[in-house]
Image (tube, rainbow, N blue to C red):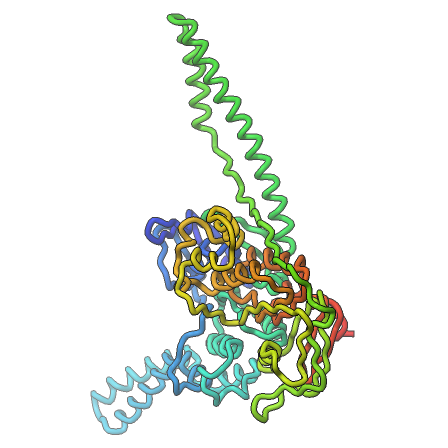
Length: 536
């Protein structure tokens, strides 16, 4: 059964056509992931399906009786006084409003008689039927069921705005699920979730009975849950059945096939153009008897005009980026002895004994609030008792939330770290997807992903031999992740990073430090190696 049908959707913003006769059928119970470069139209499709945006042309149909729940990428700002419980009940405000009306009717009916009473009884009866159909009498039971199911009992009385990013995502999803929608629309649902919550969320998604349309840059997550992947290119859909790994393999084959078709057709077109030119020259030489040559040339030109042109496939050209390392550090990069990490009197990690060696690629993992970021900040202080930074260790740092004090343009800022001609500087910036007029963009106007890319540029051209990263993949697309992965793998120094991006961890890490129950456990290998060890 078809749940969602998009037929030749056209959507433009100004002169920029984002979707160009985009078509997609989604069957009931399927999990479909939209992928593509930033700005390709992924979120636009989610908004069109949810009804938040209208398309310029084309048709969209949703199965009769279907209901939609939409988890947006950025959690909505709530009133300062709102608790988690308030947020959950706000999601059923329409039901609560009807409940309040029914109470008012009941009070009025106690005071009325005769015809006026009969009129109000009819109104009450109709409203009550609507209330019952909406599940009004079971709403408290449903909310408690959701609270228990999502394991947010400890959050219910907390102020919503004081929650972590991951906690807000789970509460927002819980609020949506109170109404048990048949269609879930999810925009970057795994942002800010820790590993434990990610694995719970994956299990939730796989068990969900309805239809799911999602946008995600989390390749590991897509691999686990998706049954269909839709690549958006030039405003059109390219559909692949299966998970992310099969998509990568099939897409590479598609590009190879289409490129061959393009080259073959280009040869045919070139030969036809050559023949046209040749016949026209013969016609001129045979004047006044050259008409047959011109006629043949015209026939070939008409065939050429009717020829359905094969578009040149988009071939991703990732230019490798390499960190400049002029001076290597000593073997001992960071040594921590008998150190207890605490904030005021709150102990986060007890009795830390840790040695990080030159060229280690270490990922620090653990649940939200366990002390990962605090540990990195204490290391960066460089004067913390029992934490020793080794000889000639030059650290570059990218925090979770990047702020620039400067309001220069990208080009002006980049020039502070790059020696050479502007043409060479622009070429270097292009490796980080800063092209053309984009380099004149003010830093204050940069998106989260652009800030990460600019900070990476800064580090590339700084003389460092140790990189510390706090959730570096949070705001960047898959292309930038792949470039960063290769750069870190080739980096001739030490890498220490916090991440919940399991695909990224698999690509970069050779050691895992897992924080649990106020202790650090060390595992050799990447995320899959760690997972296999704890399962055994």
